[in-house]
Length: 292
Image (cartoon, rainbow, N blue to C red):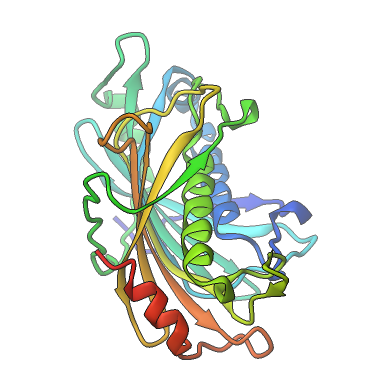
């Protein structure tokens, strides 16, 4: 296993990847990761069958080091295989722009038999392919995701038909949009001054910008399309000097058991300088009211 045995994926940026703060949105970053691992899976003769027959994401672990800005040049994304198990494998990513590391991340996946609705083991051909791209990665600090037990601020998340992927369920990337919807609704409802760029609440626009430093997600069950909204339950788990940590669960409103669970670290930054700043005391007080 070599440190530099990375598959070189080339990803075209789209202007729609950019958010109101002028850089690639955190959810779009996960879409870039998805495209990169699709390229490596499609590079082997047998691995197209893996995509066709079924492979599901079980978790993401993402560290955002620096913003990615729009450019007509293709983005360099290195992707490799950091673990290979019996019925599970892990892919690692390094996204750089102009020589600067912007994102490091891992995704855990497993082959899935959608007819039997059950995970299956990797076959010998798949295992041999993944071992060709084995890489070493530095493990990120653990970010435990708590169980909210049905608690937290509740936000409706209405599925769209376009949210569905080729396997017939809500794509893993789209589910981060649901969690983001709950995160913004929760913080802005508690403190209107936390409104993100482009959001106008009660006649005033927020004076802070927020960047995500870390985001972890666990996919527990498949999320099917439905006309009725799902529910995102969000709570604050830590209030720091310059950051907030929030946990969220995607659920059916009638069920306490989560379909997807995540946690995110938000850092407050000065919109003019882009540098981290201390949370205003009013924001700290409001967020402390949401602590679990």
